[in-house]
Image (cartoon, rainbow, N blue to C red; front, side):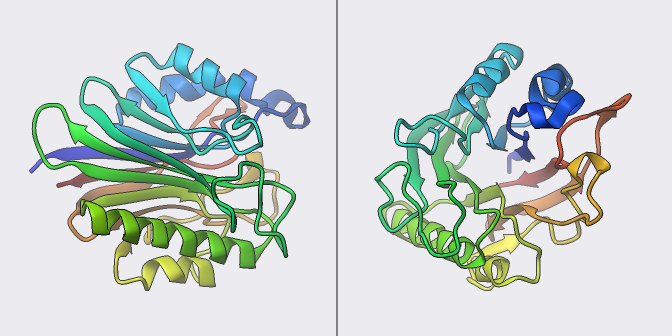
Length: 255
């Protein structure tokens, strides 16, 4: 059996509206903290191109996969970072969450916000031997529940299609913008495929402690081949500086 550490991390997009907490004030602290946790794979959400560049510069040893969501494949992306000394990517897949998944910048319409949404998937081979695995990362819509349900169904269909071609253990990380008892999360947990490794984790979104409602909206799901050692959320701060407006979740698992 091989041990792995996976992290889901909404880095909070760079915006001057965050004042002292904007990304480029937090990035050194964020990267130092992530490096100290030494994860094998990290699923990032809300990563713009300039943020990605900053992460690459500050996180030696990691490579970054995945594209942005707009028509130019820029803007925010659901980026996958992996440890280059441990893993080799064999296949990368990025898809827009919409009825036209290969049309970047498209949406489901209906109750979805104006923001396109994207998910990324990568197949990894451990460099020192072991079973290959698939890692999927997503950020679903913050506004429309119907759009979130469609997104989850699209991801499950993608998983089923890829697994039919090449079955392998799979992990899904992401900011689902939905609480555990909502239809979109129940689609994941009742699929008879994925287990919610984060079921015992409490609230993950705090809005820099300025929001009146704290929410559990970040998750790590896994297929049944994975054995869980420990799953936990951390609330990192450096003085008045937050890691992000979300708390990251870490999962130690074996395969």
